[in-house]
Length: 209
Image 1 (spheres, rainbow, N blue to C red):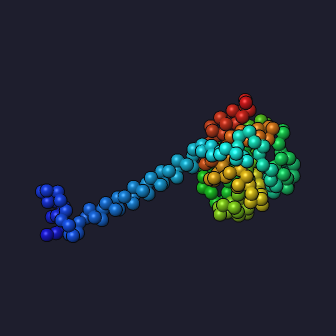
Image 2: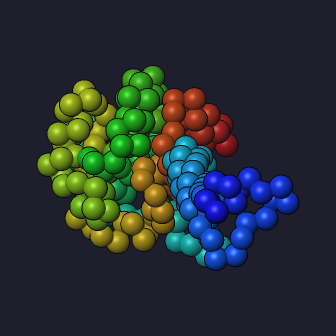
Image 3: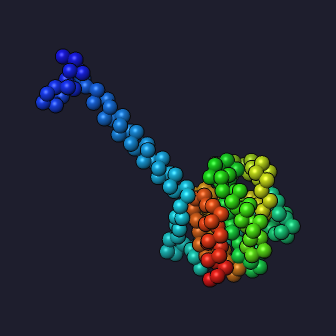
């Protein structure tokens, strides 16, 4: 008896020990379903507010944002030098600190929104991009600078050689954006790509606190 005839038996049973299309189709369907679920979860995590703060974390809301050294790609005139410390920027206005990488597709996707936000809010908040490609396997500083030039981004951006920044700021995904108030305290954090609407919403919340 052929496999096809067994699949179409009146009683709907499959003979034990006989080949059947279902034996191959069912595992394939399960694999495809698992893949779809994984892709869906990845897409959702790339555009949602994770707010991944733990109790006692050194980068929780209300804590002073950790200091680190920055070598600037651009915006030296805005931040006051080629090599600076992050804490040198604290006190004048809130900071939208964006961690990104040159070979990170979601980072590339959100940069035009960050640029538009910078042009609109530059008198009220400082946008500062920090390339973490060398710590995440997503590019070198040179590739980061090339991305800025390719997209025509003009807000201040640079990189750091301080590997502790990933741990200190609890960077759990790329990109990650940290909203820091004028007192240098962390106000909020967003893991994943964001758009102009979210940038404005979170920044206005910070300005109006």
